[in-house]
Amino acid sequence: MVLNAEDRRLLQASVGKLDCRFEELGGDALNRLLIVYPRTKTYFSHFNLTPGSKDILHQGEKVAKALESALKHVDNIRGELCQLSDLHAYNLRVDPVNFQMLTKCFHVVLACHLRGEYNACTYLAWDKFMEQVSEVLSEKYR
Image (tube, rainbow, N blue to C red; front, side, top):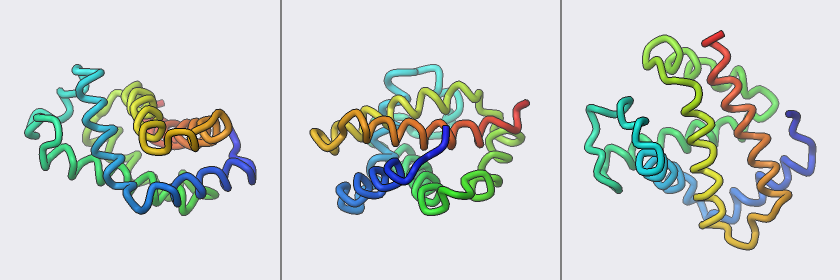
């Protein structure tokens, strides 16, 4: 899916409305992932998996920073996330299906934070963006 100019505008506008709390969203999304999809806990066995723990919030912040970086380099997401893709495929061996599950959790978190601003067009823009990110993170598995 290709992000058009309107998608990019909606992404930037919604990030702007989050009042620089994007890192918090990562922690919220990761907490949600571990609760809704408990089998994902296997990738974090060395973490304190209590909801809201420092480990989860720190890892969620990493996720959010990677997404934020991809947003800033939306024309070169593949290049921007290349090292992260290698890490997930070759070292962490994360099942690529987890990227789609995290995307679903991110949608819920964005909807909670943006409320009425998270309309169908904004959802679609985020979904396209997250699909591109998931695709890049999954391509080394092929």
